[in-house]
Image 1 (tube, helix red, strand yellow):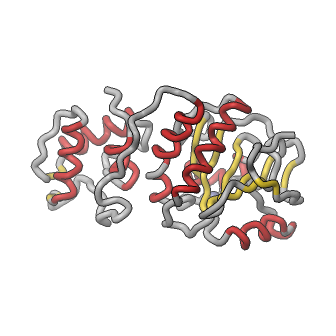
Image 2 (spheres, protein in one colour):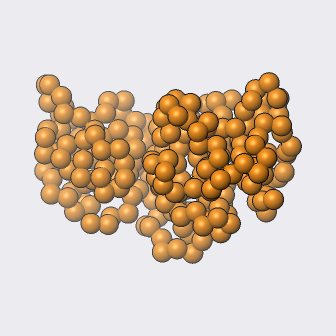
Length: 257
Ligand SMILES: [Zn+2]
């Protein structure tokens, strides 16, 4: 039996595989797309055939519904390998400061309990902190769960969890400019070529990080090439497009090369 010290126990629910965990690869971020109370009652309703190990309200501490030795019914093919956390909020919401803290506390506990490394991953066969949509169709095809604003907060969760487990820290993440007030247009190679202040701001930041890039505000092949190399280095999806995750990482990810 494994329950997290400090988490409020709110079980049981019938929606689980008893003793069903094959392996603990890490933690899956979800967004409830609803309220904490509504999600709790839904996950306790046998007809929903759904649950999660942890619920994370917008304010207050973590709440545990499923023992982490049991498999919750949260992300289909991932259920027997991953611990799940459902964050209160609607798709497109950012996590509150307390939710980030709770996610970090949980990741730190999973590190101590199961040896889960305090890193981000988008690979369902790897280990660390992942998100629902990364599992694709096999995980139910919830590509928008937990949503870009939450994904952009992953570096903050990782940095705090590293602090909790006493690992060498990444520099404290500074909030990226224009985020979460995202400009709305991803930076990508297109015709006519994209040219604006968002491009220049990103180029200046990449130059500041040590990349060889000219801050001229034009998003052409040279910018896309730097973008791809950066995405590769940071284990982001490599597409040469600066979306919310890649944008945020330019400010929050540690400079490693
Ligand atoms: Zn989800």
